[in-house]
Image (tube, rainbow, N blue to C red; front, top):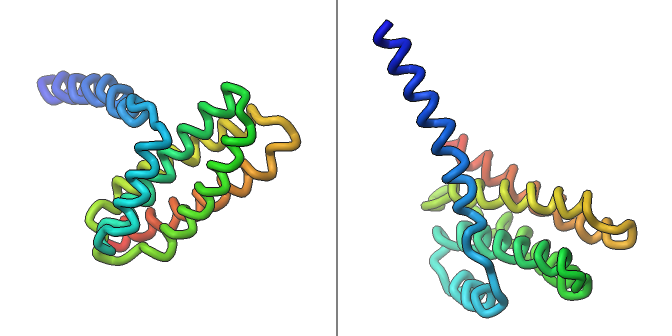
Length: 152
């Protein structure tokens, strides 16, 4: 009886804490200055840190692109999506076995893929190809990072 009660409390705590953790990813509204600073930091970082920083960059660019698209600024959103593709490809190249925060990178990429999928469903027919290409590249980077997590 006692173990059932403690199990119920553990499940209750786990399910109530999950939305709080998941919502923390989007609390910070990205802007171009932050993205440029992060891009500079990522290009100068140690190889073991680059994968995570590029994933953070992809995440922030995705969030800003989604916001720009929702605001009707399709041109800027499309330009950011093309840059998202470039950095998703850099993640493939920068992934190393000694990445310090590969799990965190995988979480950011998973969330970015989710947001891009939402954007894909909300986008017009003309914009879908760009969003789909970005989504494909981010999903590939996410699956690569997931394989690295499970290799450890």
